[in-house]
Length: 424
Image 1 (cartoon, rainbow, N blue to C red):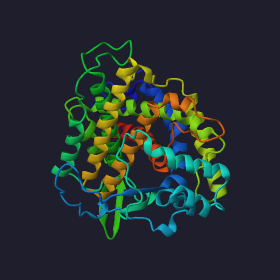
Image 2: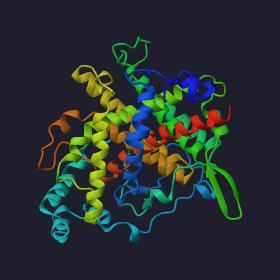
Image 3: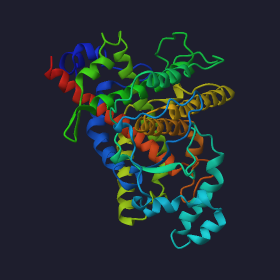
């Protein structure tokens, strides 16, 4: 894919979306080829596996920032919870650490787990609550929490829009500027200094990229027709143009799409960094089905192998550089501001939008947690659990599904390029 403006896109929707991205040394064309041929087919299969398709979430938490507007009454906003009888037994059993004490649980379930699994469980119970989370995690023990089958509740345009939706995104963007603005430097040595604080610049690009990705999903799976008890979903080119066309967005469309690619590289780098955590032999993606679990682990490792072969990874050292105290302050600022955004997701009135907003926000929060835990990941013991770094199942599911959504967005962009070409 070369000559983006002349070959692939209508110039009004493409603008300068080619060559190198801002703040990194990777180009859009290389990401497209890598994602669409190497990553997307594998990540799609991976997120369809049982371990990754069931996500436990509380969609009834009240909005902590303003009075509840009430839930969207449009039928497509509804989320169909999964009966627990359909959830793989291993996923439910692994939840037992949340409900009872470690000693009782290990004794009661001793027949279900190997010694290594029980050791991993006990380590999780002692240490995961002490870690610095970048997201407001749902209490999975709440009676309001449900398992959701993500494959049966796909992310798509539900009709949710208007003042309620705008208030959510406006509140999210208002959280992007850090105070005090203590760090001023470009994100990479070749980028000219524009006098912007590092925190504001990076944080805004991550949120803008997430927003762009969600908008692409909505445009790609739009309700085109409804009648006779049958709904027709598909790509809406007009809606895509409204959100990304240069003229329609006053020149912002290209920047929004570049921020999507920037976010993709950030999460790709996090997966590269966390690969050693999953490559250890005793780490299992447990559902209770040995054959299923082995195939899922193999597929996950295939994804990691492709990621490690990518030649143009983002260099996070340029983003999180600084003296020890400065880096610590930056981490805390990132963590608290992003955690606040995860709380805003409980203000989304559409249940299906809330579900996917919470999942993708948690996925990005987990990626940030990984990038800020480089030392702990480097020191992972090969044959036993780590006391310094752990990921919960909820974080793992959100991480891979969140990245899967970004991968899908870039794949869907290719489809929109073809539609734009056909409709010139």
